[in-house]
Length: 193
Image (cartoon, rainbow, N blue to C red; front, side, top):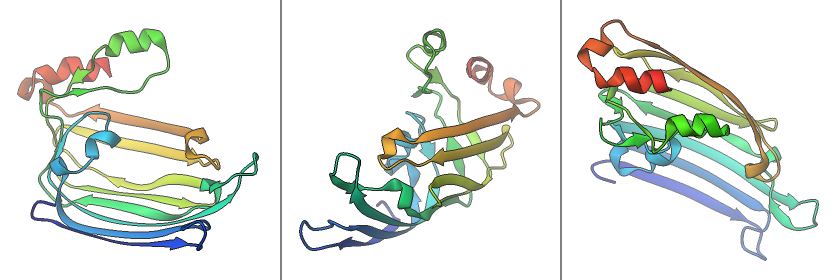
């Protein structure tokens, strides 16, 4: 992918049907250009720049659900995902619109078609999520930035069907002194969030 390399090893357990007992996957990536990866999916439309190193492992078994259908069981999943951007990372480009997911209709009205985010520089990004004991938790996030201070708490209580999982999370940020002078459009965006 670009100048970067991505490798994966995937095992489908069970013969009939193929993968009928689950999957095991290991993924490694080095120097991957974040602009060419589906990072926008994870950030709801916010582009990212910089080269990423990623490492992930997942063991996802299949079990019978309440309806008697054999399907993936996320409550028994185990694994981790790490992402690192050693230098030169940023989120936003000043043109693309970030569309946060909100449940409240009045909040959705404030978001409208999205919020333009000027590039927020990140000196280094280092994050890890662990999947075990029926939870997916962010266990590490380091994102020093001259533009803002970021803190993220995230814990997903996994259900057999991933879409039924319950997310508890909070993203906190503190704007750095002088940001609004350097990037005037950032003030409105951050106040709206």
